[in-house]
Image (cartoon, rainbow, N blue to C red; front, side, top):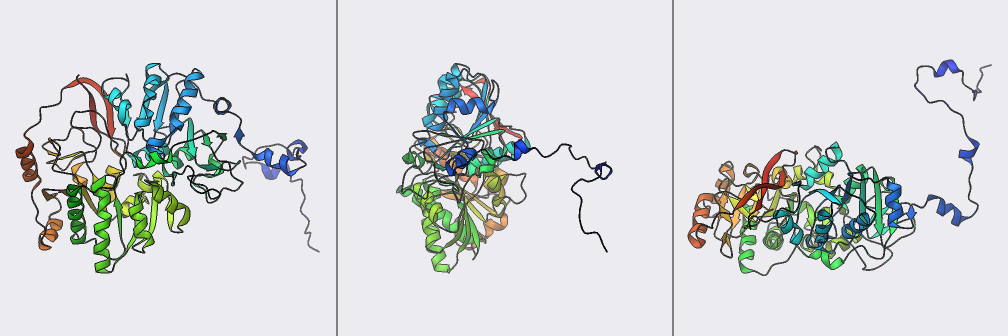
Length: 515
């Protein structure tokens, strides 16, 4: 009769060459110290009584890298709260790797001056902090990365994060965090946690700061508990009104509406405007307004978009709820309407920055974009685009996903006025190259449209559709006739910023402006 029993004591010889660790079951490890439900729940809680204790547990030391996300935009409280605490605890020479920084982060100036912060890596800078850095505040240049470039750098180890401090509008005791809460109406919401996802996944330690602890499991979640080490409950994490500020605004400006209508006409005549096409609208009044004109054309032609991508606004949500956009892939909710939609709409999906735009990920979503509409501070006759420095050479913007989407999209449209005030926006050479001209297809201004000479077939389609097309040189000369030639910006030799392309290569240098 065949022996069917299996011995629980395998022979030593059968283990040889397998590389398995030795050891025996431990009664101590198998024991359960809790006897009540409360004790059971306490045993898996990651909630730490104070931020100081969480920092201590994280193992943070001088010279390490700390990271933050920017989903609260100009309403963020977390960066200042944490950096104040780290200064109080005596930390020095830290690298601050925030996905972007806004006007509200001006208090960081004193932490740079005192030596708490030695380096900054980010997508953008605005306000007093940007002005101070442009004028030589830091000894080490700021490294600017696109959203896709930042994700690639984190995942590859080029930008190692030691401790990530991530604000979350809701979190359960085990660490499942999200950008909204299902058990309260209103409150602090940021919607998608797309830029926080990479940080949480790849940081050596991740600390969630939240003002709202919910019952486990906090599902659906933006950040899973498997990526979270500690949780700190704080009174407030941000001002929801600040999410709307900065780069997102709805326009009634006739000039911007003219530009938006022209951009919609370009999309309609481009060859990509068919049933199942995909779209992304960048930040800025004109680019956001394209949606309302595109809606009319979609209804007239009887077509729908397969998906909308990127930073999501209420305009995109309206199209989705009307059935004109089937699905939304949301890396950042630009307003509270978008945040509410993520909470309530089945086909509104939050995605990570890596899924969105990492050049190291062959499946990143920007590669499937059919059309993207992007804003610009200035463009030049090589179709190069600047979204980072102003006409005075001062840092006042963000790279964002600009070069990522321009590279990936079949049709990359850049919208900007021909002149802004008394400053030309179409120039011979931009102050700072952020997006290379070879990835830009069309420039749309209030005075005309220019098509990249590399896209001669596209140009012909527009002409055949009755759209007047100028050369980029004609637009530049027209701007010059209107406002003249601005005096050149005076720079010092000191480099205050390094602009990297999405693959990590250096695109341009930002030098200190002269007083």
